[in-house]
Amino acid sequence: MLPELRLRHLWFVAGLLAALAIATLMLMPVRDVPDPRISDKAIHMLAFGMLGFWFGSIVVRRGFIWLLLALVAFGGLIEVAQGLMHFGRQLELLDLLADAAGAVLGLALALTPLGRWPLWMEALVRRTAS
View 1 (cartoon, rainbow, N blue to C red):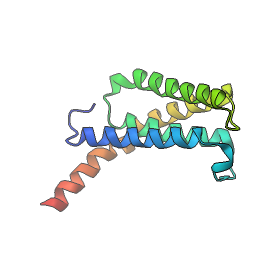
View 2 (view 1 turned 60 degrees about the vertical axis):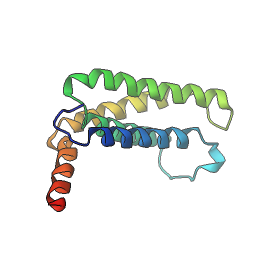
View 3 (view 1 turned 45 degrees about the horizontal axis):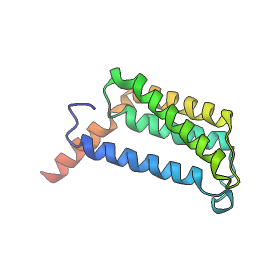
View 4 (view 1 turned 30 degrees about the vertical axis):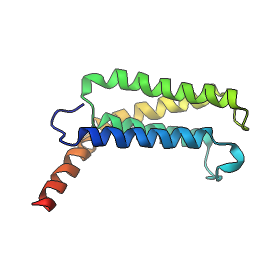
């Protein structure tokens, strides 16, 4: 993780909670999930894009390939679980591809100045605490 982050463990745990929320929503029975009226693939891309951006903003750049592999593996595990659970969901290779595309886009966005948002947040907290 980025050594300059003072709250890096907090950022990491918050990211894990977001990943848990995503997994929960993607594994819930279809009948229990509200219809967002957008493409299932767009949902996968947005969810994994957010995870890629979040974690890409808190890890060192040399760890990006491992982060990408971890996110794709996470998406793969969700797809396999969907196929095994028989809750009206099914394993779809296109969902996994959408997960991977979203993760790549999120990591790319983390490489921009926007990827410094955790540092900005920590600086803001320090200023308001002073």
